[in-house]
Image 1 (tube, rainbow, N blue to C red):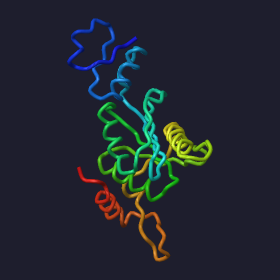
Image 2: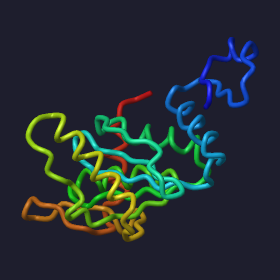
Image 3: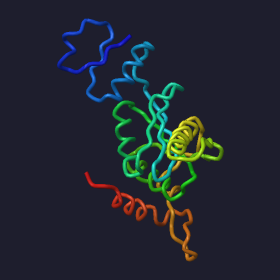
Image 4: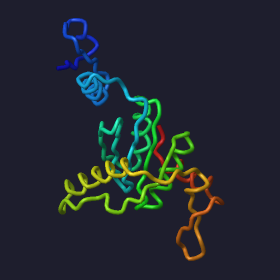
Length: 189
């Protein structure tokens, strides 16, 4: 067993596994690690099922440690938060929503995060109609993406440029412009 408590109450608890909770999510993960007698893993893989509300999964030592489903504008912040726990991360992004996945990849790569694109065919189970089914499907897809090896990417290999037809085409020419547009679209703060 483990006890999760605040800094103020920690000294009053005489128990072998006391976890001080400054962030509830991190505290729960720490309590689980103590119960398993493992420390913080040196690395983690983050799977992202891109979309307007991406599913995000954190896998360390082969175990799913956390899952999220957040608005796209918060996805990059979640990855930053995860980086505070794990010294080394690899982000695997599904290739289904090309523009979204490319923008997210460029933002992460520009911060030095290793990124792979994963073929996300067959990663999303059908769980019925409605918001709950879609949300769970996005999270399951993110878990499957985290477990699937992908193709490493850098700014040059995951940029998009507009072509005459009005669509997008891969190419290194506009990678900095795409990255700049994406950064400008993120909320300030």
